[in-house]
Length: 159
Image (spheres, rainbow, N blue to C red):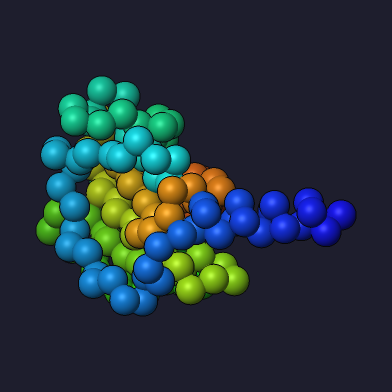
């Protein structure tokens, strides 16, 4: 049993190796038209099919019947109410939000960028990128973060 715990602890340390995120400068808002995603499994990308030209989405983005400004307003409110978020930068003119999210029970920070875009017929969709600042693996944290955020947004827009 001791050997299994030691191996598990080493695997966790290797997956999270790096400089604590508190020492890393806050990133600028990213440009989705030039997005490049590393090959490491510590990112998650959500985008409409065919939207990205320099990266591949991990999953397709939902389409909402509401206009992009209304969706962006709800998104900003949800992000600001989400625990462990900081450095929230929201630009209503471009409908882009960028923020830092601390991983629960750790000192590690991830960066998240989301843009709400037009989807035709007055509707909207989004493109989102969540990524770890350090380490090789994120143990699915970025995927769960974006899935949770999208679920909350979908529920709010359904009211």
